[in-house]
Length: 257
Image 1: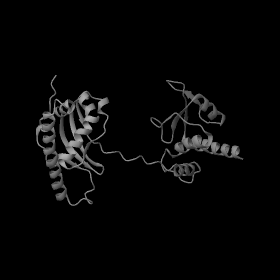
Image 2: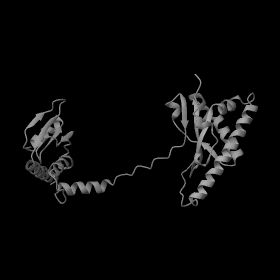
Image 3: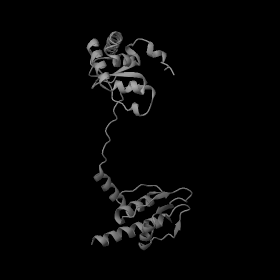
Image 4: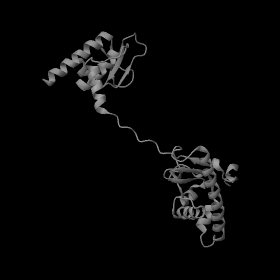
């Protein structure tokens, strides 16, 4: 089956083909950037034609490079702080393997030399996902995950449990109870629901072991089994949430003393 090449890949590169990822305030005004993008596109386009023609001439001595150039098309470039990366349309997984192997490295070396611009191929995982029509391009890195301030979170939870801070809403007592059970008694719930309950009431679900511990603490609500699974549910009113929270806090203080 012949590979269908999108028509826009057969058009010469233009300034719009270069995606600018460098800080504009450090690299001049937008007009200068557009001119720079145009120069990059023209240089790479000319170099691409030269390298492809040379690979055709040397197809008998270097068949791998010739095969590579026949089966890749350039979609554009990404100008980034780490360099200029090619955005390629690759016909198949086998050709994509060549792009990321020594043949691809020789190709970018020749292209960079002819264009007098350092260009490279971005690392990507498309080889594992597609077999035809692969788009190999630079992907903007995701910002590093910000580590939560666990000390601040712990202090905030303690303030809620102790009643020093609290939300003025019908669910405040239930959330305080759940935090107290987890932090002061080590009793974690497996789920909680406020749906279809009157204001100030909610149902919390616990494992059988934690349900027993809750009963031992004097939970004022009667336990009931879940419709599915082995979880045990307790439905508390707003006042019962307040009372059980104080019981949990007192029990925690007794254990600490």
